[in-house]
Image (cartoon, rainbow, N blue to C red; front, side):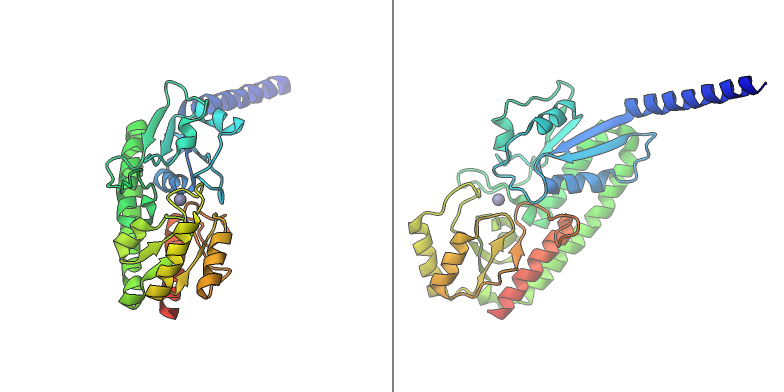
Length: 302
Ligand SMILES: [Zn+2]
């Protein structure tokens, strides 16, 4: 009797394991994003999806605090891309390293560009840094929610609800940034950063950004551009200058030295990546609040 009982328990246990396995295997949904901000939005949109609908995993190819302009595909990245159900990029020539790589994805993988249909600056290359304008992020998050609903129809209601809640937070964030910048003197709203990442922020919120380096951190600042910028800083009495979290600090230090602008060593603007979870820019909203707080403080100091 005892042996029969043990056998019964074993059979029940094995059945449970195999059913857990098969249900998980059939609902696993792997999302690969190019960099941390996209992963943040995907995580927000897919939260609370129960495992019996889909077990979602997300992965960013470019790790936190790494430069997405100059990433190189690793063997682990290639493996993740190969297994992905959905790969989400910004587009706008941001992830050139992905196109130049030999890594492939399966024919079943959906490739999706979050910036599709979002108005971008062309100079003549497209400026990819659209995430610094909250209104453009609202469009991107809507785009991402749409493709997620298409791929995960049973979770569409949950995804749309997440999108609605997050969109309300973005609307609040956009108004908050506007209100904060409005506190600063109009004639002081000029800022020097390392690379040309904040055009959209400037256009949306009424601040002019100047940078010695172009759209990609990969570019080098040429001495003529730096000399012109130094003149402009002196002529226009620009007082706010920032390091960025990922870019080389030498050129900003040189400009600060030659113009006499005081630089706050610990104040870093987050241009192209979130911080670690314990850092100040642990998600998109925290990043925008952190950048805006530093910008306002610098402009008020001016
Ligand atoms: Zn950048």
